[in-house]
Image (cartoon, rainbow, N blue to C red; front, side, top):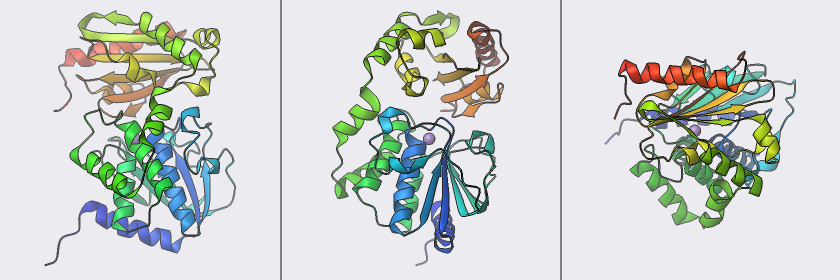
Length: 333
Ligand SMILES: [Mn+2]
C-alpha cells in the first residue's frame, strides 16, 4: 500500500537534496537568539559537520550565558565572510528583518525554517509549521525522516530547543507529539535532564535574581487584568547586570492570579524600548505587529523607538493592549 507523503516528509526530501548538493553552509539564528533558535541551529550544525560539510554560524549577538554549555556552541561567530555559500539556513527568522545578517549574505540557496505565523516565506525552500511547539521539534522530524544519525550532543541541543520553547513542557504548545519526541530521544540517549533544566531555566546570577525580585515587587497592575513591568538601564546598573545576560523575565512575572495579559518593557542602549508581551486572553502577536513586531499569539515582542522615555512606551503599549481587549478579539482555543 502506498502511503501519501505528508508535508514534513516532502520537505525533508527537498532539504536532503539541498544538503547533498551543497558543501558550504551559513547558519543564522534570529536576532536575540533563544534556546530554540540556538539549540536547533547547533543540532543542525553538528549533523552537517558529521557529514563533512563546511559550516559558518553567524549572529551579531553574544550567546546568552545559560546556553554556554551547549555542544557546538564554540562554532558561533560574529563575523560574516564576504564569500558565497552554497546554502544558507535561517532558524526561526520570520523575515529578513529578524535575521542578524538581514539579507546581506551570499548563498545559492536560502532555506527558511520556522514556526511563527507571520513568516513571509522569503526562502527558496520554506518550511513553516505553526503547530510545532518549537523549531527543535521540526528538526527532530526532519532528521528522523531522513534517518540522519543523531548522538547525545545533537539530542541535547534538540532537547534544549524544545524544553525552552515549551517553558519546560508547561505551555499550551506542548502536545502529545512533543512528549513522544522527548521520550524517543531519552530512550536512545542518556541526557542530563536535571543539569540542563538547572542551567537553562532555574539558575540565575545573584544580581539577576535580586533584579527579578525588584521587578516582582514593583509590577504595575492595571484594570482588566493587565500588568506592566519596567526594566530601566538604571536598574541594570544598580544590580550590576550586563545587558546580554537577562534571562526571560516575562515568564516569571506572568504568574499573578487574575492577570491575563502582561508587558515587560526593557530600556536598551540607544533609547530603544524592547517589549515582551504575554497573554492567555488576546492575540498579542497582533498587538506587537502594530509596533512592527511579531511572534506567537500568546507570546510576542516588539521594539519601540523615538519615544521620550520608557514610560511613554508603557502608555503606548497599554493603550494598544486595551484596544485589542476592547475589540473583543480573543485567542482561538
Ligand atoms: Mn521557537
